[in-house]
Length: 330
Image 1 (cartoon, rainbow, N blue to C red):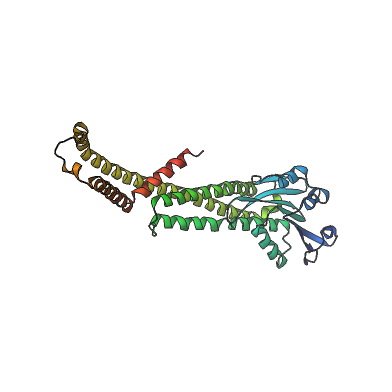
Image 2: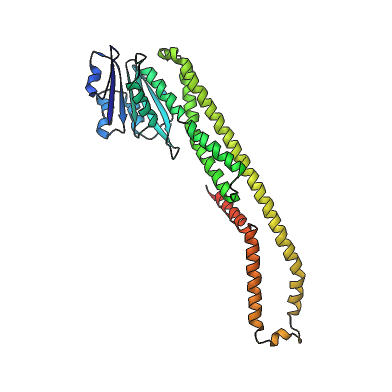
């Protein structure tokens, strides 16, 4: 779908008009949004707008790293949005000229839709395409905050462990959070570098009056980067703390097993030498002695199983096995 919004020289906003109206002499500037375009619609980037083939290739190929390219009559900017559930990067491409802005994205982007709706009711529209570019970047960066705030809340709950979750469940959640933080880091750090280039480029003379606005976005990205690193350190601390606690409990279990083994070693040694082959063993002539011994063995086995389970040893052994499996993963 292609959405078109034009601003006339009288600063009247016309949304939903035909694409050919952008060439009207009454147009002051316009915004064309390629919203989940088809292959035929994507071809208009070359046939109608005549953008550079390299920029068009960046739009149509796999997700590019955020970047800024300079062409004769426009800027080409690659931005990243964050998918709400997966936290994967979604690309938003902008072609920004003196009197136009063309956005291209293969999936629905909440930030683009919100800025689009705000533009149709904007009172101060004479600021032009570069103001829309600022609004888009600002909204994309604002949408980075909620996932990080959610991660911080989860980390606080894990640190306090108010629900008394088993250690192996906490470790699994910590590793999932570290994975989410890595995804956010791969998106936010390149965006931070892009904003640094925008705010320090001498070739962006047309945006000099908006440098303070872009500096504000850059400050937000710096804060986001610091939040990511802080949360990664917290996850590392939680992981190390619980692994240390886990190792300590495992050592206590091994000490118990060692004590039990040490007690029965001399008994087993004596029984092994003599083989319990004595003449006077009344149990050997008891009619139900065999079944009684089986019952005693079953009772001892079940008693030890219940005791181990109540002490959480099976959960601990399961956690150790999961940790070893995770270490083997590439």
